[in-house]
Amino acid sequence: MRRRGLLIATGVALALALLLASVLPPPARETGAMEDARVMRGVLHVHSLRSDGAGTVDGIARAAARAGLQFVIVTDHGDGTRAPLPPRYIDGVLCLDAVEISTEGGHYLALGLPQAPYRLAGEPRDVVDDVRRLGGLGIVAHAASPKAELRWREWTAPIDGLEWLNADSEWRDEPRGHVVRALLTYWLRSPETIASLFDRPASVLARWDALAERRRVIGVAGQDAHARIGARGNWEPGDRDISLRLPSYEAAFRAFALRVGVERRTGDAGADAARLLAGMRAGHVYTAIDAFARPAPVMFTATGGGSRAVMGDELPSTSDVLIEAAVPAGRGVVLQLIRDGRAVSAADGNTLRYVHQASGRRAVYRLEAFLEDAPGTPAFPWIVTNPIYVGPPSPVVRVVPPPATAETRDLLAPGAGWAVEHSGDSRADLVDVNDTGLTVPSATLEFELDRRAPHGQYAALRLPVVRGALASWSRLRFEARADREMRVSVQLRDPQSGRRWIRSVVVGPQPREILVAFADMTPVESTLDRKVRLDTVDSILFVVDTTHSLPGAAGRVMIRDVRAQRNAPR
Image (cartoon, rainbow, N blue to C red):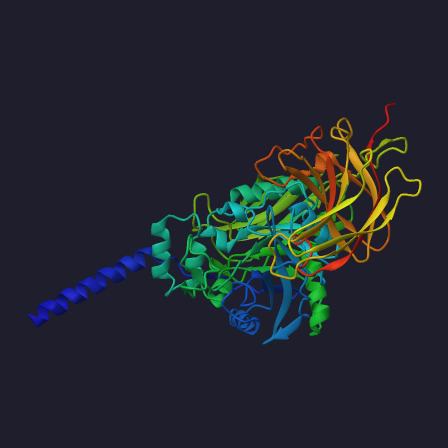
């Protein structure tokens, strides 16, 4: 009887082993190639205990070192007002402190950003503008996340780059059976299991290709690593109550990594960080899925007109251009050359040559490499490079200022004057009103926001206008300054419904003339039609609130000479 039980147990164990072996992803292939010494290998978009991750920065660096990485960019959630930690080496890994900013239209990674003078938040176009103006490198995070609130929705903004791959997004749309299988195989082949959940992000790649046809946009792979899966809702990484500590940082880092071309490394963290960010900004970066095969060196060049370009470069040649690619990875490699989003050449082997015929239009080329046994339908790429831009550059779209002959109209309602509004315990005082000879006088708002946690605190200057006075006009013109750099929200309000349309602007110690086009204003309520109902507006407000200011913020804002404006007829 005992023998029979032993045989049954052995049979069950063997069956389970065979079943597990049948679903186990294949081990990563060893290519035998050598990585380029001028390339730094590392990861972007990692969260620590400072926001919703599971580890310290030191622990993350040690995990990166065990995974053989040379850099890690930590992007904890924030608004840019925390001073970033200076770059430093930990266990031989260069650690950069960046930030993931939540906007009303998705999340935006800001790299190389100094401490911001005010909160970076609100409309995505404003955050993109702030990051660029402050000198940071901005990258759209989880661009096509299955979670609508995480998905990027402002593609007209001049973003610097996007995540063509986001690991945290990849598992969210997987069938439950695939997730269960991954939980079983993770313990045997962790990096390979993570990569087995990847599906080709066709919509994001198409978006990237379309944007790159008009201007330079870099593409990167983001880990979005938290080392934790929560229990609430869709297993949120931020759930600290009950969570599984997987995938680990090390397993995630072994699954895939960025390769960034740098001129040289000195061992000085500040100098090396500057070179790393310069390489990323220049597009000298590609992604390799190490869980498929490793190492993954790539040569991708374009030569013509006596010049040579590598990925990320412009080659404005007027002659034919030879494009060459090589991936010394042994057998079973397929190279695919993508031009303007369409495959134009493929090679079953380690090298590819293609001649670009000179023409009067720009062409954008990037390279994808596949393994013959790549998972997914369509197959998920092993390597994705950034583009080489060949031919004449795209024309620069310039903002044309309004003509000097623009018509204007004073807006102050007869017998009315400036007023202030504020929330709860916030303070708003009207000071230094100047009505000496001005049809629309200037006024200064002195404010102090309630110091408690953000709950909609605001202080505002209100300018009453004759209802309907803005109809048939196209923009506001006014002068503004403040005692420090800040964002002020310009708002139009309908008194009957309480509806408001907004556009935030940057003001500072130096007086500025500001134009706000009504067509650029957006409704506060997302369900409203975007178009401003100019015939119903009776108030213009200049608002300081906790969208862009911290609780307890205090200061002064001066507004003068507010007018409606439109182009004069020719």
